[in-house]
Length: 106
Image (cartoon, rainbow, N blue to C red; front, side):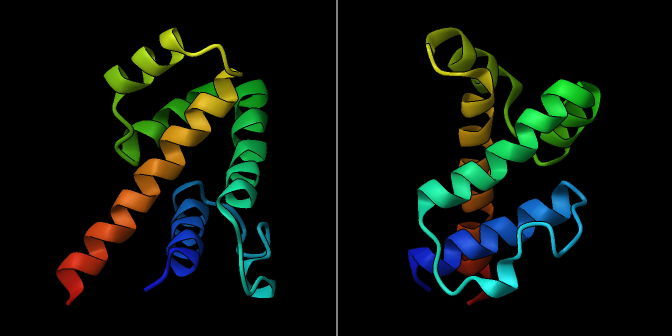
């Protein structure tokens, strides 16, 4: 499986974990996607949740197993927008899940 399909798979997981409508990211219309595009798609949702429903975001981060300690450390060390830091942690975690599933499905 290529990095391209791993990104698509991670976005499918993202849609499921964040309980988004399947048409929200329009993944069925996309043949290829770059990491930066995936990042921006996720960041839109993260920014929205940070502004409107922060508790839901925290619950989802817990449920998808984003390390609270690593997140706090990354936020403390980074000069980036907090939504950007959270997005990177989410995307990295989703890509780890895809890799793990590939490894154990063979």
